[in-house]
Amino acid sequence: MMIWLLVILLCAVSFLFSGIEAGLLAINPARLRHHVKQRTRGAHRLELLLEHPERLLVTVLLVTNVADIVALLIATRVLVGLFGRSGYVIAGAAAVPIYVFILGVLPKSLFRRFPFRALAALGGLLETTSLLLYPLLQIGGTLGRLFLPKRSSDRARLFAAREELKQVAVQSEREGSLTSTERAMIHNVVDFRNVRARDVMVPLAQCITVNPQTRVAEILQLSSSSGVDRFPVISDTGQAIGLVNVYDVLFDRHEARSLARYMRRIVTASEHEPAYRIIRRLRAARLGIAAVVNSRRQLTGITTDQELIKRLVQSA
Image (cartoon, rainbow, N blue to C red):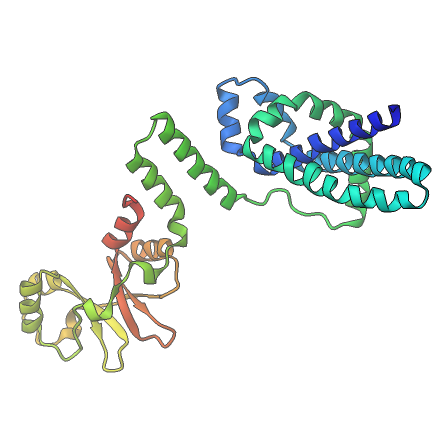
């Protein structure tokens, strides 16, 4: 009877630490920091433990595997003593559903559903286990540094930081600190790095363009009828070769017949170039319009600084 109680105890340890493993991977860092600020019970201890998540995860995996192996060995020995060689078959048949479902799927599902509550409640157990296994982990870490190449620990966690910022915005909206529009604007700013030129450009079919042979008077008339003051200049081969601003024509005291007198250089961007990079280039060039070209350098559309900023701050 005592042996079976020991097996049950080991299975309980495996159950808890298997769930802790899932909780460590599912816990929300932004929400944890929020609980620390609110002085939620167990939050500060959990934050200190998670300062070294790799060490904590190794501790959990080590305890889980040791408990599983020892419990299986003890149960197999007892069953073999009772049923002879058939005990191996019985142990194997019983171990599969127990380890897969009861000690694997069930605790992970529970702890993923409530990661903070579960980990905060078991913070003392985690802390004690980490202290007991600290010498073993130090030896393993030293051996790992000797045989494995050192990785930089100063790499920026930009992607994780962006996701955490979005989660903070969602949490603030739930608490009433932010409106839905403000939350949407924060999400758009965070996701703006994924926006490409093709996502914000006006297709060529909807653009008003001119060619080098267009007369100055025609440009003034075109601007008056369309309300547009900047026109991309397109060559006969479909390439963007410059930009004409109507105000340059209006403020010029000398009458000019050639369009080349007013043609400025134009910023060109590929269809796959990030939108934030186009904004930087437009600011550096002090221009408000960019030509979007394909791989053959042919114009496929245009984008303006107003459209880029609109996409940046628009509400979802």
